[in-house]
Image 1: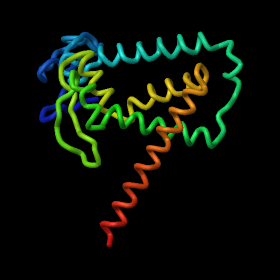
Image 2: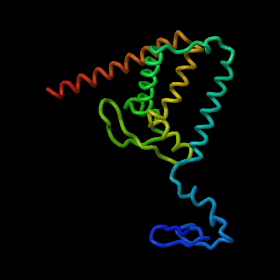
Image 3: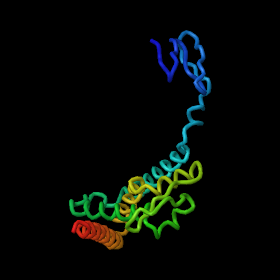
Image 4: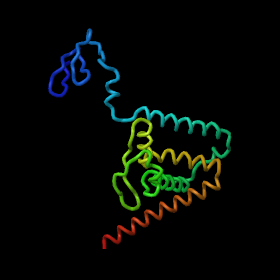
Length: 190
């Protein structure tokens, strides 16, 4: 079978190498000219991602291991608790990732791009490796939500009273945000 790459045809038994060069292979076996070339051209901080995934997995696994004999683990969330914890997770995630005031915590890993309205900002990750991966994590409310949810659920087990107060406060603040945005939208429609 003949492969087509960009504007030229590559005959069977050949592979493309670095910078589009074509190299003949032995008996049709795939031989890579430079095994690291794909990683070198990949702009993503894959090593940093691996470090963050390893950190999360280690912390969450350690937490689960330490809590394995707690009877509270057998209690399931009610639908209402899921809603409240979901609202709290969203609120804290957006505070970490987007809030203007918390930009000071993101500053070592990000650069200001623009105001995003309603007290939020858009920032871009800076640096390389783990620093850039951390910047991507803390500027993405969807990404940081997993970490936030883990902390809130652990708090429900380890410090239920404190966590209940904190989660309720965050959920109420998020509901208030939605009411403020709805009110602003209704006023703009008049």
